[in-house]
Length: 214
Image (cartoon, rainbow, N blue to C red; front, side, top):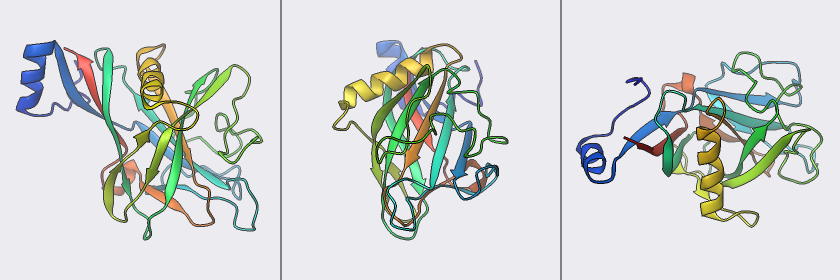
């Protein structure tokens, strides 16, 4: 068992394990990056923020988007998701929509190489969400977050397109299937940036609190 990933959570973890055969663990993002249409071939994986921004010229398509990779390969099977948190680093409160990308090539990107040109599901979008499934891919709306400046906040699961339970189950399935990685991407419908802290920032990175089999 990988103790660096299995960040066990305190005495409550032992109680849960004794009663239900489960444990609660925190899984931090393994990779995160912004992709930017203005810099389509530039990798921004070392930036301290992961950003999303809509068109600055009155258009209706995002010009930058955020990508997150979670890797559960060092964990027992995931049974439930208690929370999905991000540290909001923009000066004013703004919202973003979060999406799960699965299927062919969804998890092939790396923090050091992802760009606007090669990001998964980043083909010409058919709606304001900014993501369209490529061949053999699926894009699932997980939910949304409205950030309070300088605070840790939760993604609220569920949308008009999927219930909270369905959204969680889709993410759980991704974390338990294949390479046990999950790509989550976000977009913002507004001319101002929506920023969350990246792994490199020294602030809390995007984190899933999971219930796993003990």
